[in-house]
Image 1 (spheres, rainbow, N blue to C red):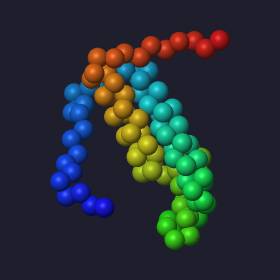
Image 2 (tube, rainbow, N blue to C red):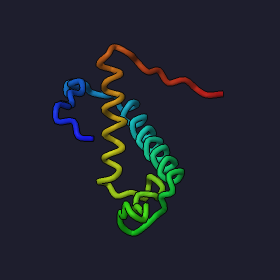
Image 3 (tube, rainbow, N blue to C red):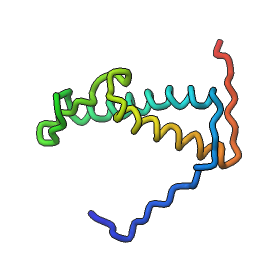
Image 4 (cartoon, rainbow, N blue to C red):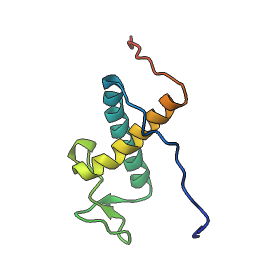
Length: 100
């Protein structure tokens, strides 16, 4: 169903600069975003294929994050970066804790 009245308006995070630690976290989040997406696709019956074919449920993106093209990685990175920027813009902070 098409909604012509929908006008996306994400928070403006253009003035948010992330620390090197948060940029490193963004890359880990991007990998996790991809892995979560891949699990969902596999559960839906999708398999690896050399090109995307919705009828056959094939996609070339069912590979480890490290093997994705930079263009595909950028999609996942953007999701992670914008999420972190929104968290920071809302006044939250993230603190690294050593896992024992």
